[in-house]
Length: 295
Image 1 (cartoon, rainbow, N blue to C red):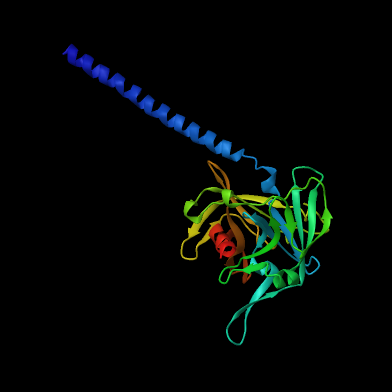
Image 2 (spheres, rainbow, N blue to C red):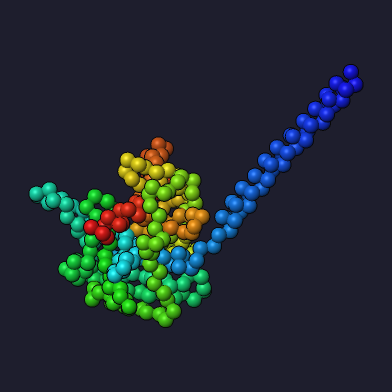
């Protein structure tokens, strides 16, 4: 009787011990996850990512957008959304034509945005010359354009379509390359992303709450992947001026350029009867850029 009782007593004592181990294990997992999230939240981007967005201004600054620099083994390209620089049209034979909004644009490229003193280059890009020289590559079906602005060998030789309006010592060109690209197949929803650009449409000129000619960074996540359209849905709002800006994803092995912002997702407000910004954006994956450059 007592032996049986002792066995029962031992069993009763064993239950809290097992439960405590489970609780401790769960607590350690939660702490580890919290530390991981905290560590990710504390990640500071290197300055070259902050300065990776290019300000593009056309029609004497009345229209604007964002872009990025991409380099391969021999060339340096300006990449942006097509609608930043022009519009598609269809001729009488149903051929798709690309019409430039203006004959030229001005590019502002920051080499360092971490200091109060801006280090930048300001370039004038003659789009007519670039087109005549065969430097413009236009994606036939997607909202993407790439313009070869320089040849790279031991030095960088800029095209004659480029003219420097301002050149500051110490300002470096921050260009993405094949080594820091992230493919569509590798992207997972809920992963952290950063969007860089120049949303100069927000704010009031008479109340300058931020510097309009310096890039803004937004942080969000990959909300979804649209496999049918092969686009990336971001939980980041985009505004006038964000189009063409780079999207960078945080990964365990570093930061990767995964796409280019091209649209915001609207929603219809029945009370006002107008379309409003939903806070979600659409980006083209990096494969679209590679198709454009390689083909």
